[in-house]
Image (cartoon, rainbow, N blue to C red):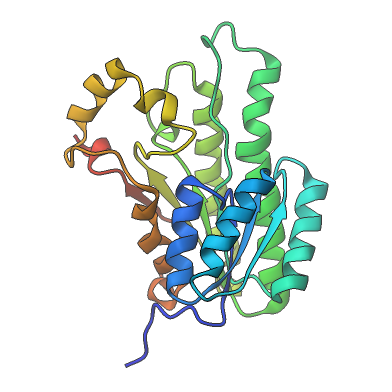
Amino acid sequence: MTDIFNLAGKVALITGGNGGIGLGMARGLASRGADIAIWGTNAEKNRAARAEIEAMGVRVADFICDVGDQAQVEASIAATLEALGRVDSCFVNAGVGGQAESFVSMTDDEWHRVLRVNLDGAFYTAQVAVRSMVAAGTGGSVVFTTSGSAYFGQQRGQHYGASKAGVISMMRAIAVEHARHGIRSNAVLPGWIESEMTAPALGWSTFVEKVMPRIPMRRWGDPNDFSGIAAYFASDASKYHTGDVITIDGGYHSF
């Protein structure tokens, strides 16, 4: 029987793939044989992630890319295609957190700092990936990283929640428009995952005391918890799965 999770000969692009959830996804994709393109803004982290994934026996290319800069995204997709030849799946994962003290004091600069990366950057990335998939004529998969704040109120995070809700709407529209091209579009919604972005909250005792009891599995998520879902969405196992949001949160949003 054919291994429907086999990704040998496929290329997966992951923005923010040099750490956290993105690196966990890269590990899962490489474990199934996919070649990997890592986009990130930190050269040292890019190099470390590349070395780790290359040790798994696949080809890896890394590029410095600020996804909020359309010109950098265009240059990075061209460099990715030159280095690896194709893009079969794109994980639109790069993002920043909110830093406002309150909604009423949120500045225009703070609002646009978050939207620039989380929504504009997601648009630029998904657009160039889908464009390359349409041109190749072989279909593909686009996967966005969203957040529970897209559905539930996050105090001082109106801009973050708005960006993540926008990502879900964009994902579904891509799924509808590009199914005819054999392109699937979905999103992954994480719970509280150990990463650089969440470190301040997860290291705050008051937060831990209030939030941990709300997680039925009684632990924070690990980036490697996203290895399997990444391999699934990049593979033929998900060939009829599109327009969906998959929650991986240890039961947090259900309790």
